[in-house]
Picture 1 (spheres, rainbow, N blue to C red):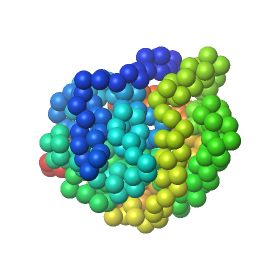
Picture 2 (cartoon, one colour):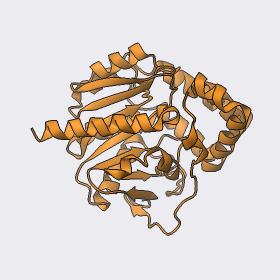
Picture 3 (cartoon, one colour):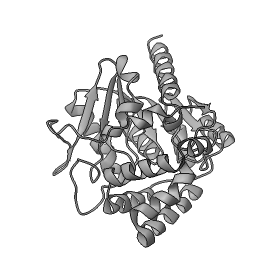
Length: 290
């Protein structure tokens, strides 16, 4: 059984001396860049911040340049009255890469940010070396189920606030193994972290955006970059069979199942998750230079 040691070291504090990166007019992104070598860019879902990636990428930093950032309207990046569109979020990724002089990168998306990873790969294929989709919301027959869940989360947020939303989503995204191991103290500790890294307004904007965009599985056939789907076999949003079917829609895709992990597999198995990415990048680099 995993000991979830990484969760006990979860970091939420920002490096206040880090300059923001301007991307679009009026948009500046908080970012962190650690390590050297081939670039790996981590895409937040709406429930994570850039600092929270530190403990889940510390092994990757030994071999790669790992970039994390807060999306516009979230965390320590610029906030505006309206949530950016998916197209604008994708443009922000490219603006960030340009500013950091990164010609191309591997993108790691998790949950709803797997849709952002897909969009960046479709719009800017020359900038994407490969995709890692962890706990994807890209269903092999569409995204109706995911959007029904997101509407339910929005309803809970409106009726019961942030704490109520966390109580709703926790058993849906956290594995049974992790839920039992952490017990009530773990639930309460993660709830405090959740309440500290975001606001109701940010989440409302993000969840509403998650209900938009093209849901067609046929889009995936146009992505030429090698793609790795990483799926917990206790992910309530997508079954292992669905994960295999999803990976098969990519011209160069494959699926890895993480035993007993939930919707956020790097919470359950951070070291194994990073090993999978390391192996994927090595194999993709070798194939590109063959």
